[in-house]
Length: 242
Image (cartoon, rainbow, N blue to C red; front, top):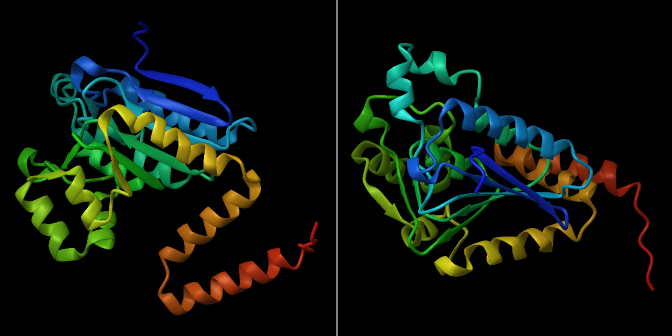
């Protein structure tokens, strides 16, 4: 088995990226952080890739930052992590990214989950924000995305208590799209990816961008934005019947 921190497989228009530090619960050391950021950008620019899928090797999706490496570095956390902002990298992707959460997704792993476009989780998966426990602040979007997804009160309860959230609860709250049997996770995630990859990549990118940009606006502004974008693009389309 390769000891590369990130495994990459491209097939049928789907780039599957697998975090590959199973003995460390796929915690994000410097090598994995930089490999993930660089590979996400590379896949976003490849013409043979329509959809990106992200998962983990072993029993964890991602346990967050590699605390042991950070403690041994002699430098502060911001100095170590600042050059590989995974949350911002995912947000900037033009192509859709699907998270297949195969196990625990803790702190940084939870942040990555929330940044992805579509989330499928195995029944055994769980989520946890331990920033309060370890004395750090989230920097990849968790404190902003979670309240916008599940409501401010619920987000505060989860983050301030650092309690575990099951995959089923995540689905009820809305940050997990679907919960599937552990053995079926990758097949189900791939099926979703294939259902997206069958359509014109440029149109998929347009729809994703329309949703992403509009979501950050007040509703009235977002509706105006949608109308303007639709008018500009739809004016170039002539439908025909067969």
